[in-house]
Image (cartoon, rainbow, N blue to C red; front, side, top):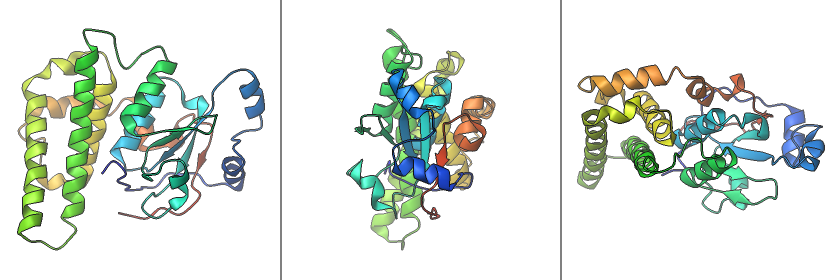
Length: 253
C-alpha cells in the first residue's frame, strides 16, 4: 500500500515547469550544474502520502532541496510513472542518469549517503533508527489499509482485515509510548517516519483518538511537527525545491 495517494492542495503548475520536466531540465542553469558534478533529481510524490512526506522531510533535513525538483502525481490515475517504477507507486526518485529508486526506505538511504549519513547514524544507533523507521512505515501502511478497506462494503472478511490493521496500529503506538527514550534522541530517519505516519493517522483516522491515552507520544509529535522539515513536507511550495510540477489534476482518494 505504499503507493497510497491522497493528494492535497499546494502544487505549482506552470508551462515552464511542464516543459522542464518533459525535457529533463528543471532550470536554465541545469547544464551548468551537471558540468559541475552536481546530481539533479526528480521526486514523484503525492501530497498526502505519508511515504512521500517522509522523503520530502528527509530532503529538507539533509539540505538537498536545491538539487530536487518535484513532480506531483496521482499514481492511481496517471500511468506515466510506470515507465520509471513498474509498481507505479510514490515516492519514486529519478536520478540524473534516468535510473529510478523506490520505495521510501531505499530512497531515504540513498539520500542519506549524499549527506554523509546524517539521518542514519552509525552504530550503535543504526539499527534502532531503522527499526523505528520500519515501525513508522508499518503504522502508515496499517492506517492506509484501514482507511481504504472501510470504503468498501462491509462483510465478515472485511471486518477481520480492518480489525487486524487496528490491532497493528494499537500495538505500534503503545510500544512507542512505553519506551520513550527515542523521543529525546537527535532527529533521525526513524523520527521522520513516525511523525509522518502520526500526521496521516491524525488526518485519516481521527475516530481512533490515538492521542487520548498516549500523552508522551502525542506531546512529542505535536512539538516535532512544528519543525520546518515537517511543515515543508506538508506544503512543499514553502520550501526551496528547484521546481514543483503537477502534470495532471490530482484525484481525491
